[in-house]
Amino acid sequence: MARQARAIQTHQAILLAAAEVFDERGYSTATITEIIARAGVTKGALYFHFTSKEDLAVGVIAAQLELGPLPPQRTKLQELADQGLLFAHQLQHDPLTRASVGLAMDQWSESAEGGNPFHGRPFQSWVDLLTELLVEARERGELLPHVDPAETAELLSGSFTGIQWTSQVLCQRKDLTRRVIAMFHHLLPSIAMPQILPTLDLTADRAVSLLASRDAALEGEETSLDEDDDSTSEADPAPETGPPTRSPDAVSAPEGDGSAT
Image 1: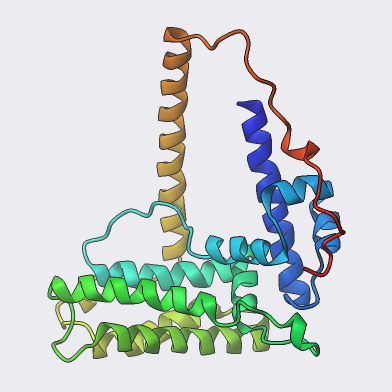
Image 2 (image 1 turned 180 degrees about the horizontal axis):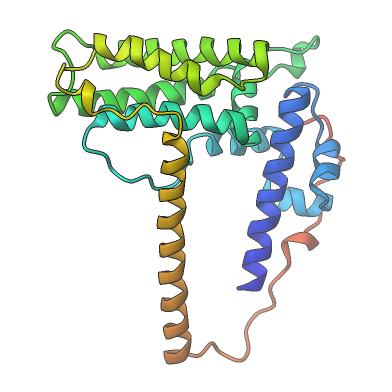
């Protein structure tokens, strides 16, 4: 169990270091060597968890939408608004989210071979998520008859992208939550049934309360798993012998320093 916990911590440390370097330098100019130094791990440890710079970028992008279990809401439009408010909050406070957006907007370096293969990819993930929520909202009678879920998802994603970029340029995203709330106040009346609008919570502290609920749910799950592990170990003690296990930090790196891939 201690070895597994250490591997998880190493994985997260590498991912966070990669996100910080991508956020600061862009994908094209970031190097594996720089990420290893920032994470404070060995080259072997990094290559145990990630095979290349591209694999690291995939991990950062995947982390963008991994907000954990959020409490279900009365309406799917509230869940859609929650995603926007949470995304704004994460852009202000989470380097993984900022790096993912950076990977979407960072296009090319001066060298064609150093181009960013992830340009635009996180945006499509965001559009897909919004489309899914809007389809469910339509099935539950929350949308006006003329609303096309895919088209509306693209409009919301594009509006959010423009707003967050403007906020970044003007004030390092310090006013992003206010701008996103204003976006929803203008756009939601054009897609939502009138009776839905008064039920929507678009307050500035909405994201913080949602994250608190998520963390409480995760803590409850961890407590339950710990109790199950304790009861299992008492009933079925582990064998005294077994094959040796290699530490992730002891794995040899592939040939080459990997700093350019």
